Image (tube, rainbow, N blue to C red):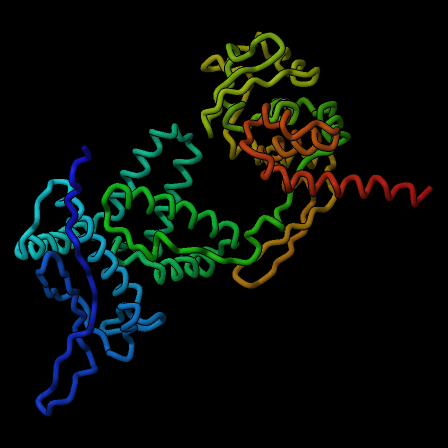
Length: 431
């Protein structure tokens, strides 16, 4: 026999107060918004905290009309977010009463409403404290590396630059639009950079909402639409097989011995697909015969990558050289390595031009560089994937080495390989 489910039938609605002036005319300006809570034959009328002109109120939706502004610069998002919080908060209270099998009184509901408003007031100044908690907690749970912590430190600085007094209450869809404008105009960010920034913000907000912070629904639902962020303009900078072999055998002056070590680490990554963070942490004990086995810093995946004659020769070169922490290779900081890679590329005469296309707002921008100016540690992983696809190795096999979760991320590489094949086939036209 199943237990009887205790249910509190209820309804919550919002409407404008109907009040007349001294002449008997209905007041239509600066009208209080009322919240009506009906349950078990009871009805409670509450002030929802805002006033609004009746012409700016959508009675059918029971919300402020879109793109309207009210007293003291309050936007429709501010008002509607608060109405959403009031409604969801009281509904959650009723659900908790149902679980306990208790029917609340009018005074109970009124007290809960006051508590909701009181909690919101207490917590409006906890935005940056919550952000710090998020970084600390999620960083530990996901075993973030230094680069990820640095990204979120930069993100926090950007938000402080935008509004050092930001609160959860003030962060809604309208303020996020203003934040996007700040990143574009004040920081000069590209649309792709802004999109990543907003993705990080949304990650934090979802965590905050799950941890009972008063996050605006409009902020959680915010969707960014910027030109050039669909990946179609993404440029893959990589070395062809011929360029890679040339770099591997390049004669480097003795006076530039530091470039020898940078070259070895970079080429090793080109032939194994390791990220910078993984080659930085690679230890001699991770070398297992004809393969390297390690846990990735970014995704915590355990990978096994077989060695080939090029990667094996580089490990052999340093097998008897002691490095701090028993590291396998002489890896320096990412920033310094990127700087030296450009110098190395110039020495290798990687002077072909590469055009980068991106958007800043609605402005389409093209910039042309010599290839060596664009070399970075991440080019090694791109070189590994692109050349393997060009040689006919299946995506499935490549993913076993790189740790990619699906084939969708390989679309941009296949596009580059198709362009290579077109150029190669066109050589027949010159015979």
